Amino acid sequence: MALTDEQRAYIDAHNLCILATGKKDGSPQISSVYYDWDGEQLYISVTSDRAKWRNAVRNPNIAVLIPDGRKQLILYGTASGIEHAPERDEHIIGIRKRWGRPVPEDVDRVAFTKELDDALRVVLRFTPQRAFSND
Image (cartoon, rainbow, N blue to C red; front, side, top):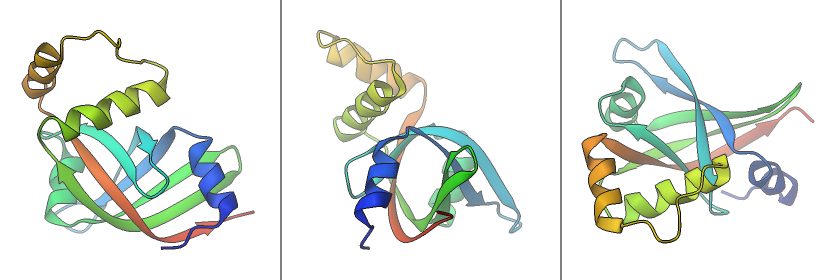
């Protein structure tokens, strides 16, 4: 999808979004989550025992709202899961850096991977397909 330069800059300038998924019964489920952005896709760290993960795996059509006071950007698209190292770990490192909680450069990668595995930590890769803003 073609985002405008302004929309890309807006996404890049933020790190917190509202993730909306659909429950099994069709009702909405929303959560505030931190994300990383590579210019094409958002990466969101969740745990595999939570509703947002189960919902996105069952129905990958999700929405993300990035708020900034009264201004907002809404993205609709699809999600896919990243469950294993090393790709999952790299995206979690990126999310933590944007969140202001960077992982030390000299972290023991084996221990870090085990910590993420033990916590059931996974990543949703969100690919926007439509965007709406209120500017």
